[in-house]
Image 1 (cartoon, rainbow, N blue to C red):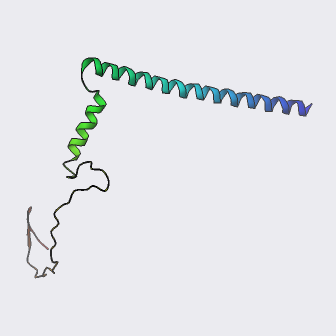
Image 2 (cartoon, rainbow, N blue to C red; image 1 turned 135 degrees about the horizontal axis):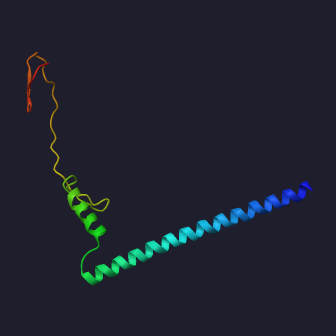
Image 3 (tube, one colour; image 1 turned 135 degrees about the vertical axis):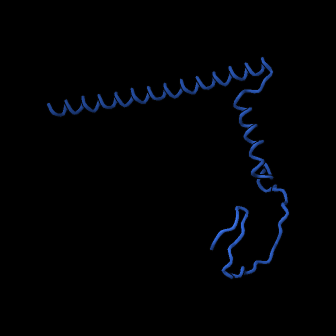
Length: 109
């Protein structure tokens, strides 16, 4: 009697796993299909109106704004522009106990 219950239990677990796997695959496929339909409709709308889609405009603005921080822009790897480098000789700053003057004003040591 116990072996029959074990067999039915294993069968029920296997069927449940299979159903959950199929449900997950259906969800994944439907999500991908919804994304594909959304991209197709946005592309069609962009073609009909003659405007770029909003995500494209946002990323173009981001790339233009980021060139402020990186003057080489979004160059391909290995094709970086040459940048002028100034080589200076380092030297010790004497510690004479006088207050230092900075851009924000004098600072006591």
